[in-house]
Image (tube, helix red, strand yellow):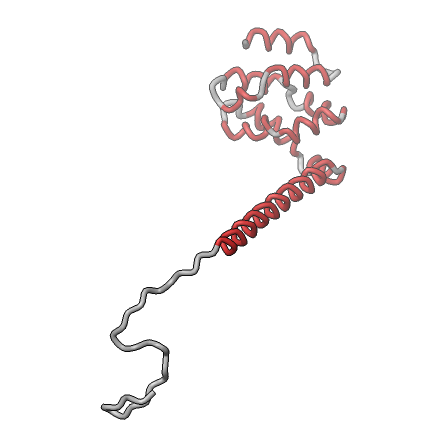
Length: 167
């Protein structure tokens, strides 16, 4: 298109100078629906990935190789020693509430003997008694009594008396 007054050529865009038109926004239900469905499937796939990862990690934690590694690194020795030597430290809480540690102790008689040699359940009972209003309230005395019953070497009478006096 050429401007008649100046003689300058312009590219035709289809609009006239000075004329204003409102832009039309195309909103279609099909586009909205497609976006919603895509978001839903992305969320589902992420959830499936997380669940599968957790299952794989749980399976790996149950293998003998992982348990052997924990035994070699002295996880049980460290846990019980820490509770025995620092009964008021909050840093002992993860060792007390770690379900893997309890599972590992209850499943293996050798680990139960190590628990007795390192001080047994008594330091743990003391810790539960001293920190009644803390995170350790979740670890009930019933769980500790189960551990005591599983350990044959320990004097059950003294532990039962200690547990009763601490309540």
